[in-house]
Length: 249
Image (cartoon, rainbow, N blue to C red; front, side, top):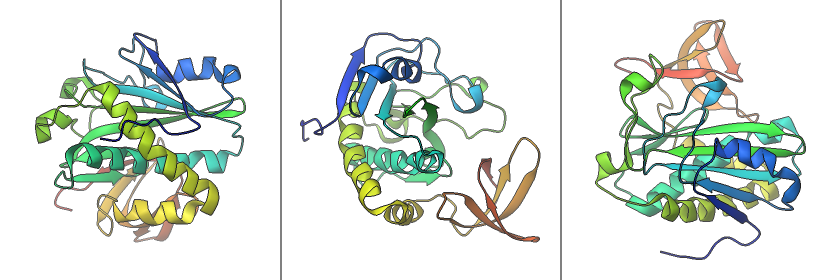
């Protein structure tokens, strides 16, 4: 294992915090460059749309503060950069045999269950990328939203045991080159790599928003990162939604 921390990235390690995303937002004016905020325990962790993020002991919680970002479109595409970094970090940990896939817009699946989630939040002149990974244990099904993907843990599914601190190094090492590629070449190579790891590409899925539900064939993601479905009403690009996999699909 390479133990070198990526150049140009800072880190803050905490024993306990309300939320690593909240802490990253609090220190934005203190950080000249990208900074990882890691905590052994979160007391008020949250997921997308304010949902509670349940974090059993031994799991991974960290946030990456990227200062100097103001373009909402470019900021939203960082979910794909982070997804690829997580995928590579997990592959580096457990090897190629693990059945890892990426679920639009911001989840990592292992053997079809939810292993990791990503939460992007904008703060003045910066972006915060929150990451949670079930390394040691998965939350109970009763603790997650009804209809959500069943949570799984890395240890249960693969037998592999890695500490959150060790995983922080792996994900930091994996994120830096993807971020550099994105900054130099734009979204195209990130999009291509993400699609090669995408769950249910070419299959029927359902995208659900607060107002409606759309079922169609997962065709691709477009240059803006939108989900593109081929439906009975034609080809639709969906900017934001929760995705569900159809039974038998």
